[in-house]
Length: 294
Image 1 (spheres, rainbow, N blue to C red):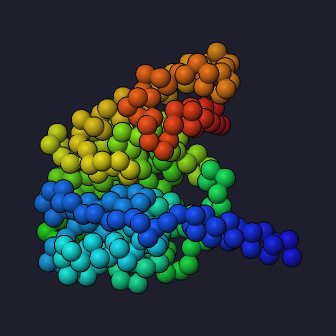
Image 2 (cartoon, rainbow, N blue to C red):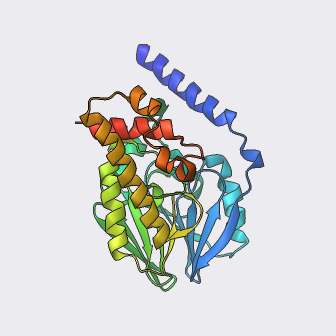
């Protein structure tokens, strides 16, 4: 009886959170990035599309209520069908449209994305129930996977323990575009899902590896924020390293989170990175938790 009660409470909380967001006012916009790749913005994580004669490959699909608007934006580009949906990680602002688009194409993701969607998760105090079967990836991989479509090698590469434990970066080789998922936030302090395998040091390592391999003239799609490039990715890395070092210095001096906030240890980065929905104090809490985690 208690388990049934808790399940009902969880579902009511999830429904309430969804109801509080007015998706009717969200406009999904499309912009061509390069080659066959487009970027769609709306609410939640940025979407990438590979568009060509073979059909559409969708990278992430935002929130469930936006799926019809996302589909309409696609039809403004092409009338070709959706062939594959690749999830960069499990969060609902990147996978919420899976149930809708999973009826149209094959969902692909890292092994841990399926595990977390199938089991349900808790992140930042919010519990998400297990996803329905149609919303689960039916093709999963451990290290990397390549979809050969539209004359493009679309390669998903797993970078462990960054934003989550199931992150993938998507490389469009011919179009010279990279979709970073939530391992890159353009002009915004990032969220890091420590409860589900993420860490700031893992995120730093992932960004360093991408920078070492991405061409200088490539376009870089962030999980959140505006379209960027390799220079923007380098700026994000500099911020991550500097902010982490500032908090780690305080930790070594046995300072508390409250003390670090009062000292405004992230002030050097606040004006550029802390003016969106993740504030400096929020990021101090994240860094502290990540750097002290065992």
